[in-house]
Amino acid sequence: MARLTATVRFDLAAQLAEVSAVVDLTLEQHAGWPAFDLRQDIDSASFDGTEVPGEALEHRDMGAGYEARMRCVEVACDPGSRHRLELRYRLGTPQATGAQALEWPDQGVRWDLWMSDLEPGRYLEMWLPANLCHDRLAIELSVEVAGAGRRHVLLANGEINEAVPGRRWSVRYPPSYTALSPLLVLAPAEEVVLRRRETSVAGLPMSVTVACLAGAGAAADPASADSAAADVTAWLSYFAARYGRWAHSSRFVAVVWGSDRGMEYDGATTSSPHALEHEVFHSWFGRGVKPARASDGWIDEAMATWATASRRAVGRYGAEELGLDEPPTLLCPPHPWSRHTPREAYLGGSRLLAGLAYMAGGAPQLRSALADWYGTYRGRAASSEDLANHMARWCGRDVGPWFDRYVHGRG
Ligand SMILES: [Zn+2]
Figure (cartoon, rainbow, N blue to C red):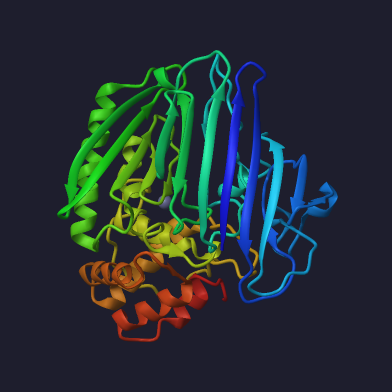
């Protein structure tokens, strides 16, 4: 449980980004060293006002492999005690597989948090200090683009206050967020086509922001922005009607581009136009109900693949008998410090759901089971064990052997 207050200052002339971050944290039920992660080199640090040498915060393998490494403050702290960690550093390319560098186009900067479930260390900790994704984190972020250069646009799924137009913003993300929640994209203004729509979703007012970004030599396209805004609004209404009430603030933010990659955030997405259905679905399943641990992230991709066929070459709403003689699949890595979703989650997870649909009596029953899952855990986190218990009720039988074999990889 923590509050993060940070300032990121982009110096366009020097092509340098400096960060000052303060984490106010409270230990929960265990005594010990506070653990956190940050995939940047730290220039200076202090803990409760005392300077901490850089080597005391070095990454360490917690047993789930070096890719899932964490940092610890080597100070014994009591349960329930409160502390302050202060860090200063310059932003480089985050030290995590697949992370993207900052870009410095002429007189400008492009910054996208560019998160991923597929590799450890690819949530907020790429850029700012954070705990594992189960831990709630209220964030106040100030962003400044300094120096003579172009005006910029900042997009985020928090409350944005634009203090100096095109230059300086503060963003307040709500305390319900965790390291996998916040979206932030910063880009030169002329590379962005913005559409804002005030609409209503299942009777609730909703502000939909769609930003189409230029890419790979192509200008941002106004027609694509209009089309994406219409699609996003339709998917929001459809999922609210089918699965239940919106769990986030009265805002949805979509950043749309030609690139194939997409990512879900709380009430927000970065997406290609053809993946919008999949990514908007994640505001219900994945960020409306969050994974209890990073290794429970397979649930969201299994459900999204089964219920939206827009991204994968598998049938939507499959219902097909699944025996206990197929090769085992590991979707939920067992180590407590493990923090990635295996790629098998999409196809293997979807195949498991098709088998559960068969056991539940068909796809309509499984869709109702998903709506019931969302209704039960909306705004909270849920684990693989929770899902096994939920599906056992809907299937009217023990599904433990299927979870053992096709989730936990026990052959
Ligand atoms: Zn997905």
